[in-house]
Length: 213
Image (cartoon, rainbow, N blue to C red):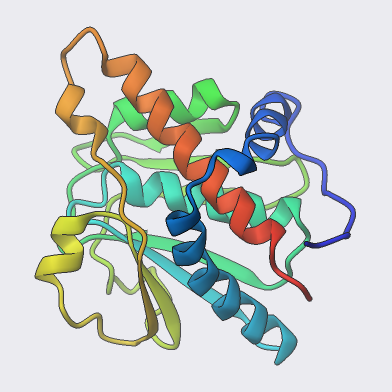
């Protein structure tokens, strides 16, 4: 495990990160084996002095892919893994779902809408001294994203099964999560979105804690 000093995060986010990093032992062994594929990709790129490009992909780029992108970028910063650039996309574009936005805000991320519309843009911050993530829904191959020599992280089984070829990807990892959308409009909505935010955060923080550079 890395012995690097952990970077400073927003004071609103730090309690969530502290909680999740104390829960690494709860991650199932089979999930840790999947995460190892991501760890090796990142580690090899950094050791070769190259930039690390990660694209988190889900069908609609509305929930899980955004949650993963944001957490991965925050985790790379927290564990001081250099030159990591995280993106997200879908097989189609919709919008960053407001329920997912709210759940990430409740976890401690600072998220501000910068323009409205059917597919609004947001600025997402996890630290005061780091450039904001620009979050909006897009296809994985949108010009906004880096489109060559990246790791395609498939965050939903539908995209993984129906997108057999991700153009430009040099590595593909099926790191799928259950969709909190199933609970929209129910009494469990808030709890399930929070559960997914914490699960994704826990696993990606664990992954970046394992990167030796």
